[in-house]
Length: 461
Image 1: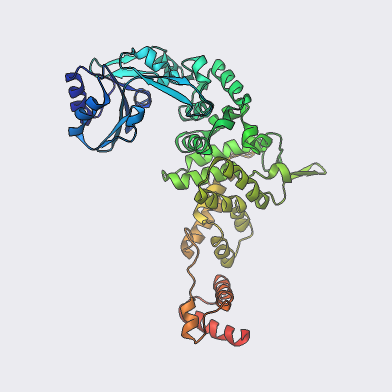
Image 2: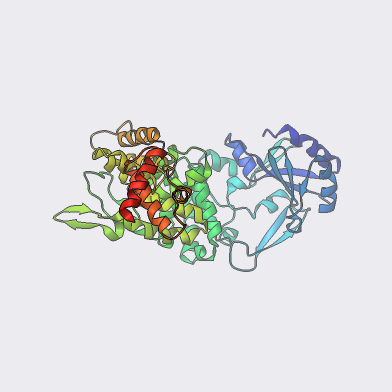
């Protein structure tokens, strides 16, 4: 028996009173079988006379969202629950793309017929809360127990170009092995241009699920490689052919290191989706310019200035999969300075060095990305128990008050006006020089800043 929220029981009773059979379907059933909590519930309604009848039944229970009614879906928010009600349907492909389907609603369908449209067997399991029975026409329960990802129908699976990416994130999230037949289908789909049919928003959504929900994102990334999808996500396709120095990277090539670093970063996630996603993409792309900067001289392997070059490479990659400008703005500095944490520590950097870096990148974010980079590799002499350089910089930055943001300028335009200066383009030059002096610790208080400013103006003017 699958446990359902108590708030749902009165609704189920009303549906039953109207001779409508509710079947809980999809992710909620799958997650329940895996002992995972879910707030999203999809319910298919068999023997439903019409959506208008459903609307009248649901009205007393809360505010309805009817935006999807034309597509056969009525949504109800019940406390923290998001519940979708819809009649069973079949789908037929009529044009290219993820949304190129014609839906046909038919309340007289049986469950096996209605669930044949679903992608994977684990998502085609239903639960009848009235009889408290599982409906599993395609062996999804056995596949879940065997940690095996299998498609429901080989013929219909290939109609949706998004499904290879769904396979990738599901395999990683639930640590499933991909059925050989399914893998072959995904390879053929990608070879035939399936990914080219997808809008970037849909691609990005699957990456989000992979990076935010999977304990080991490397499982999904490796499956993506096996499917032959990496050329679409270039330069990831070049990572495996890019060697690294064996002393600092015993694990080998850039691909291997990147996967290990992603898995480390997954253990450092905080639950803040925005920041976690920024860090995951920064780790994925931190060495993205090594394929174009790596040189071998007298047997020594180096990738000079790969962090700086990586900014342009990563920008192209991110623009291909998302229009989220904020994400790009946050990821690119992390790539540019991902090696700075260890360098500052090794050089026993001065306070001005730390202050200057805080103006270019968020130090707390940088420390976590650098930790994943450092620990995401093999170690010939045994794995370190901590990231010493990161701990040092964290302590320094916290004491200086720049862990989350740079120092606030002590001098502002109003200070210049108070001294009798008329606003002009020169203000920016003066204030930039003042902030530079502040970062270099030439003054520490507003009073000292004003004295500095007076001396500066005498010299400058």
